[in-house]
Image (cartoon, rainbow, N blue to C red; front, side, top):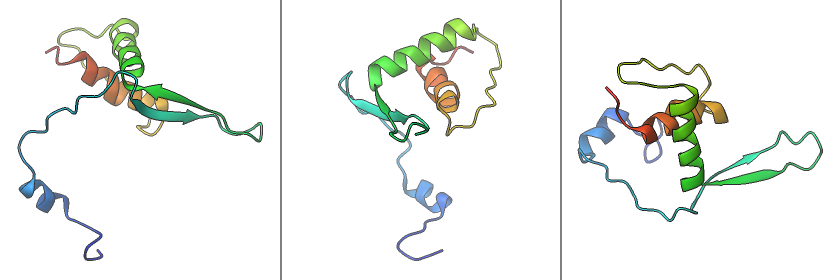
Length: 99
């Protein structure tokens, strides 16, 4: 632990407000850039935007995984992979609670 750089999670949470309101964004606001592996020598990236990507994640979560009330959903993908953050975070959160 280095003072001024490192923090204890529980101490930060003691100071945090109980609510965290969503930040309104333009539908074309950048969300993340996904790059190729760079095997061609020139990595290429595609910029995903908030509305397009989140809509894709929500609808494929609902349609492909056929998530329904009372279901338990599990995704083994690492959150660092595009599949991971799509179906561990964005898809389920965008679809909202169903239980």
